[in-house]
Image (cartoon, rainbow, N blue to C red; front, side, top):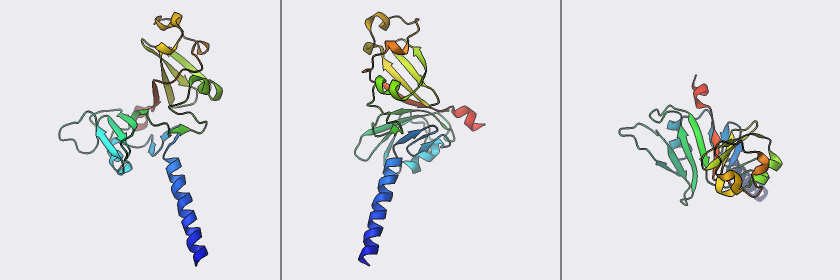
Length: 189
């Protein structure tokens, strides 16, 4: 009897730790509890144990609409979730900004990683030059990263039209934004 209760307790702990670990996994089409197939109106049930803050509250809205932030029980911001259509609770998720470093890929990439970590573990598809930042797109991944131009060498910091090469971004550069983008429009058809 004691062995059975002990084994059940161990199994429960292992299952609980696996569930918590999976809550922070990032892979293509998935981040934690979210998948590309989740509609905005489903966030209330997915994050029932957390806090959902509606950023653009829509009057007389039925269900979750518009951009929302997800906070855990302790008040730590986890995610910013943006729908394809702000006014439609049936809308699929389009973009997710990740704030919590516990969310990570199978290669260990998270919000606390550096550009050197990205270069070592991922193939970079493209680097786009923006006004105050560069956006790094990863091959075969939903993830894209924004790096503040303040972290780049001064000779390329203020040139908005030149092509920035991967070799010009310092390995120790950190991310301004850690983003996941899903093409929600194609999923709705």
